[in-house]
Length: 111
Ligand code: FES
Image 1 (cartoon, rainbow, N blue to C red):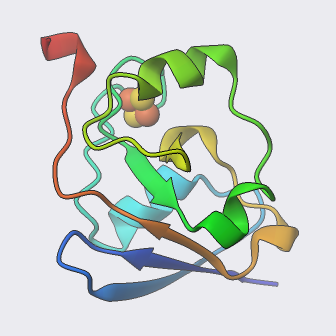
Image 2: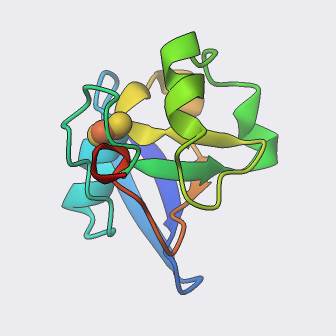
């Protein structure tokens, strides 16, 4: 069964993507053409994979680790529902997930 994910790009356009259970949200977004750099490739060292999760979906995600929370402190434009997309793997109950890609990102390693 495929899992639908809606990305809202920095201009506010909706980009629909579909993945499978176990797929990584960062990789899915990149494959759909979203400007998610993911410079550190999931090592939680850059925060350029930052997304803002729709509040309706935020509580359905598994909780962020302390390491991820620390990294989100460096993310440009971070909000209460911010997450690192490299840390989210799709599960069947995330079908319909909606996340926004912020317009700017900082590579925390370059700070
Ligand atoms: Fe670098 Fe997610 S890809 S923190």
